[in-house]
Image (cartoon, rainbow, N blue to C red; front, side, top):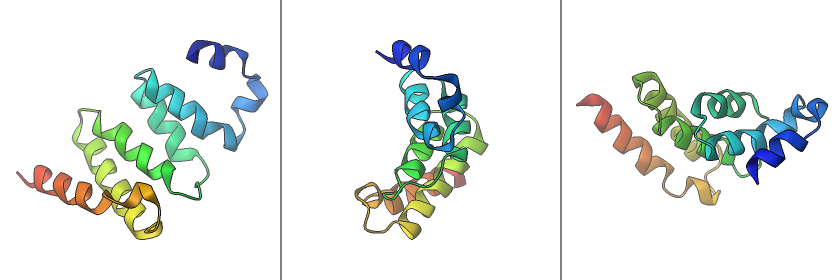
Length: 104
């Protein structure tokens, strides 16, 4: 379970860049959106752009305007930088919807 994963992971491993992505997913799953956001912003890029997809999803769940803008920017980057990724399939559409919502 998620608690076991967190407690059993060696503290030294937690500080390594490659650990940030899975730890961010754990934080997201547990509803720790600020922690997930921080980890996703600092994790190394993933070949499929999933770091940007999950950064966007994390920030869509937050309520402040800055977070929504971060989500829009992450979806736009995902579409631009990883156009063949399955995560990018609807990224441009999501970004456009967010931009419309922000403009209202």
